[in-house]
Amino acid sequence: MGISHSSIYLASTACVLLSSGIVWQKFCTSPPEWIKELDALGQPRKQKLLGTAVVCGGSIAGTVVARVLADHFDRVILVDPELHDIEKPKTRVMQYNATHALLSLFTDGARRLWPNFDTELKAVGGRLVYADLQLHYSGIAVPAPYGDYSGGRLPDSLAMRRPATQKALYALLMQHPTAANIAVWPGTVRGIEASDNRSSIRSVIVRKLDGTQVVVNDIGLVVDCTGRIQAGMKWLETAGFSLPDSLRCSYKPNIRYATLCFSVPPELESRLPIPEFAINSVCQYIHTQHFTYGLSVTALLKTENNTMQVMLTSSEDNLPRSVPEILPFISTIRGHAPLASWFVKTVEMLCENCDDPSFDIIKIPEQSYVKYHSVPTGALPSNFIAVGDAHIQLNPVHGQGVSKVMLNAITLNSLLHSPGSPRPDPSQRLFGALLQEERCSDATRLHDYGSPACEPMAGETRDNGRLARWFELKLISAATQYEEVASVLWHVRNMVAAERALLAPTVLWKALWTRSLF
Ligand SMILES: Cc1cc2nc3c(=O)[nH]c(=O)nc-3n(C[C@H](O)[C@H](O)[C@H](O)COP(=O)(O)OP(=O)(O)OC[C@H]3O[C@@H](n4cnc5c(N)ncnc54)[C@H](O)[C@@H]3O)c2cc1C
Ligand SMILES: *[C@@H]1O[C@H](CO)[C@@H](O)[C@H](O)[C@H]1NC(C)=O
Ligand SMILES: *[C@@H]1O[C@H](CO)[C@@H](O)[C@H](O)[C@H]1NC(C)=O
Ligand SMILES: *[C@@H]1O[C@H](CO)[C@@H](O)[C@H](O)[C@H]1NC(C)=O
Image 1 (cartoon, rainbow, N blue to C red):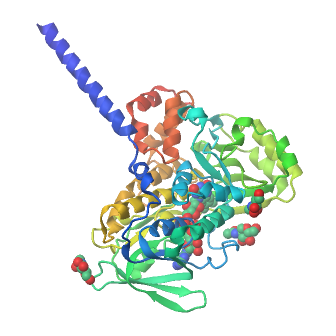
Image 2: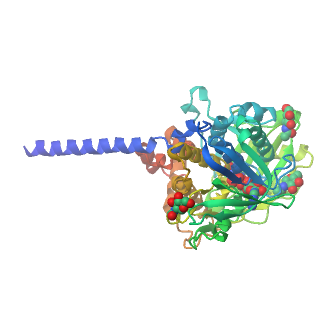
Image 3: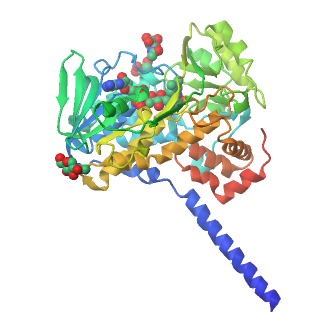
């Protein structure tokens, strides 16, 4: 009797464990909200929302948001001081000439907003290629999950320099039928006015390029897309909305970022020793340093037409400023395995054979995050939101900023489609829904704290995130051995799976079981 009792007990415990394991696995691997909501992106509503939507800033976030809002409002005003001549290089975006690697979520969203996205981008030389970053962590290759897709067709990303990408997006915006709902105002948003009881924004003040001041009334929605300036906070404070003192928090990764751009004649390109498997990837090579060595990232990207970029970063002021300094700098990069020899050889050939590459070096300022979701309910105007860098900046070496704009756009679109609109009241709901982003920003920040050069956020030390970094190294190690782990890591990094996917039992045990390579 005793034996059979305990075996029933054991069997039922095993059943409970097994079934809760299955439930846990299912929960972790279920698609995130924004992926379920992707299909609604680009779908117009029949009865438009009341009032005028004002998009403040017309860079990546402003362009994408204006396109989304034109599906919901009859009148969208897009304000930016540099929209009068799209051919002119933007001067107000510090990273305009810097290397940008885009993730598959961006392409996926852009195709829904602009069905002719592929045709138009290819026409101006853009490369639609596998969203494989060819990532090497401290010298060790972290594979992309080609096996998950039939015929090995990994989802696409776009390889193109930022100025060309941005011009093409703006052209798409203006060609789309919804452009009839969009007025482009070259100018600057100066501020906002609150409604009598401060529950919403009543008007927006714009200074046009000729110096005239215009007040836009009957506001449906105001979207802060001013990027790094995060101007919305100042507008809210000046208009009398009381915001908590600690609303904006920031930390300093202390990195410098160099983009070298080479014009590569086709004859030279055909001789470069880039392996076949790397040609049709969004990056040909990325090397990320183990954080204890620093936050350095080294990359090679084939961009539109005959251009190639080499990207180098450093915590110190030692980045190359002339061709003879490039290879000596690269030779100082340390890892658990050396840089791929073909990569070094390719850079050497570019240096020897290409005329005058351009050098763009910037020091990344602090990364700041406005915690709008922490403002008590009712204190923010119901018709204000912030999208893109105006809300959260992420350390660019992780390559997520532009795709995060798309994530915001998907969430905004589905909130505006959800029952409860026509009266748009998205502020609190959007910032609540964007908590996922906070986790994204947590993950990059805690990674960055591994670097001795990083200055943490007020109230934190570099010890914060020790466990997260340990787990990150275990995951990367397991990804080199198990396809499943490599797949989950790739999907999370491309923002097509939720972070919880990393905690699925089948992934977790593999990560914990594998001895760290680092
Ligand atoms: C060095 C570097 C490299 C990066 N690399 C990558 C990468 O590889 N992949 C990636 O995805 N992301 C990358 N990023 C991040 C990416 O560049 C940003 O996330 C992206 O530019 C955010 O776009 P945005 O539209 O929010 O802001 P921004 O591009 O900064 O644009 C802000 C716009 O607002 C306008 N503006 C400002 N004030 C006003 C006002 N008062 N009224 C009207 N308009 C106003 C400006 O003129 C500007 O056009 C990188 C960033 C840096 C710094
Ligand atoms: C980008 O490069 C162009 C041309 O080389 C230059 O005119 C412009 O000032 C640069 N922009 C920034 C923001 O550095
Ligand atoms: C790239 O080449 C295409 C033609 O193939 C041309 O139309 C386009 O303007 C070029 N793009 C750039 C940015 O020079
Ligand atoms: C503020 O006023 C508007 C009408 O102007 C009203 O609809 C809303 O309920 C008021 N909000 C509060 C919090 O009193």
